[in-house]
Image (tube, rainbow, N blue to C red; front, side, top):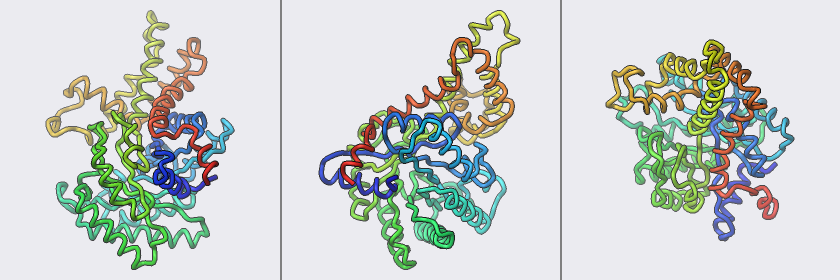
Length: 411
């Protein structure tokens, strides 16, 4: 299987020679159905797939998916084996840094405590076979919310985490891994082009001083116009960033690519990769809503026999309290019921990823599948297919369909 680094190098060569313009897709594996759909879509498109797992999703404590790093990789391999797919599937860490796991903030961990926990997670990721590690120490809960961490501290902590990982990797006798650095978040303090350029210069100096230039990051994350509430990719910003990182041998990676209006411009502007996550959770919810509508028809005169799935889902999202992290300033202090119907729907679709494994939700989903099985031969496959269709939209826009054949021709 081609390494991720080989893909990055080939994407760069294709672009320089004018042969192809391609962007790699990273799916956030926030549920069983999304993970299965991404493997299925990669096989159908004959394309590589990255899986960007946050520490909230997958970690040594099981995260909200219930997967440890080793469990996640094992499940990924299971799905590939089920469909006899041996193409490149790359498990990756997304946002590995202090206080970026919600539990670290809720437990009020000190800097030393959260850094130690992140280092343990990085080691677990190495042991599990992750191929790309996003090092992101741009959050510091000891600072006021509106005060970004000084760039020199971001660099120092980035180098510290990469140094730890490389020492562990060599000690464990594991093959090289690739790195991703930076952040798209405004609070990270790297959004302005001058600060971003300064970060890269200082990072190069820091890695060079530690003898780590051989693991210079293949991806640099940057703000390209999108976030959780905006869907317009900024081609001009992407082009400026590409021109900045290309001489360093890196490519720009965009996060928050969900529902982006112009995904075809990503490869055109030199974007090396893009993460998509909440959109696929939304597709999962919508597919389940379709099944519940079918159930309602069949059990029109027997409401007591219905699954009540969407009501259970809503209750679990509200009870989790996770929806509060997405409240807009004008919504602060409002209860869930006081939000507009549109916002409630958005919160449920976005927050569902946190509670798919709740026993009440699992039980209601199983009952829903059972109740519609006479109309839909495989209800779960129906859900997976819906998600897979959304993933295909990006594979096509990013010029990835059939790309394994292209790589065979040029490597």
